[in-house]
Image (tube, rainbow, N blue to C red; front, side, top):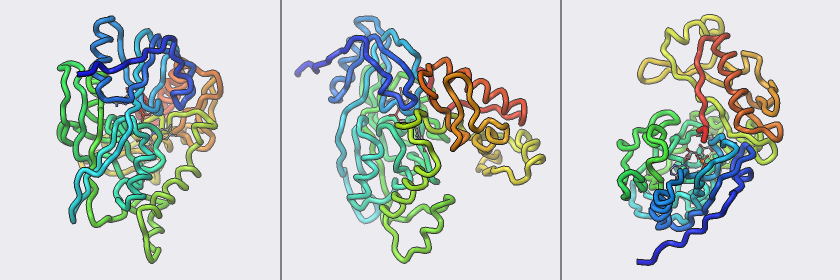
Length: 339
Ligand SMILES: Cc1cc2nc3c(=O)[nH]c(=O)nc-3n(C[C@H](O)[C@H](O)[C@H](O)COP(=O)(O)OP(=O)(O)OC[C@H]3O[C@@H](n4cnc5c(N)ncnc54)[C@H](O)[C@@H]3O)c2cc1C
């Protein structure tokens, strides 16, 4: 067996590796472009007693300025068709593959099912971690299985959907942070393709005489571009707060004061409120605090106004949470992971 080659870069700059563009550095950094490097790296980190964390595209993290350990960037690539029949096609992609490129590839192959998830930044490996979702579709809806390295057991493990315990922007991987490294993901896309056009902005596509996955993808990309600030121009981490799922009792004061407030009844009897709406109604859209602020285009998006660090982002997030709590009695939770 050949020993995987690992190049550890000292004082590894992460400022261009997170979409919030926070100034951040890791004592060591390494790009993992071969799946065999993963167990070898964990062995090395254990030997050297260094903390180790894994990053994909850095689009759902708030990075601390200095990390005294190893930051591993998943950079494995590759996608393939595993099997196909009349009812399904099963596809696999490597964890380091760019999620959006994978979506485009599926659409180009004529496979529909994840076109609503086009344009989400980041990697394939991180997609199941927070069960990414947009325009009425979640990764959990088309999930087949994933392969992960279990750093505790030092072995590879295949996860079914049940093992992953998917929920709204949640999975087992969020509850045992750092334990598993997702190596590859398999999706099962149903045939024939049925477009999911339930979400506002997509429904008018149903009036077209003909529609293909690419039609939906193009529309989704247009809608995303018209609503969200581009992180390359205005650094951000997408939706900064999860939509709170609350009991009807908790929602009552909001709905009594604002009967038309957006709310989405859930199967368990609770209801999902819109975090963006709550923030906007609290007068915080466009609010600025030091080197961080809330986007003027979208109240759910925290932006780096330039030179911000994790502390600036955390202070702003606390202010938003306290303001919304005082105004509506609703507790918001951050979506990105503070690392
Ligand atoms: C402009 C913008 C728009 C966005 N829109 C959406 C949206 O519509 N819907 C949505 O759900 N999200 C959205 N996001 C959030 C983000 O893109 C997703 O959460 C994405 O899946 C994160 O991928 P990443 O590779 O950048 O993960 P990172 O930010 O690098 O990591 C996120 C977490 O996952 C862990 N992780 C990363 N890779 C692995 C791996 N291989 N194995 C185990 N753990 C891993 C990290 O340790 C970290 O805890 C948006 C973000 C931005 C900036």
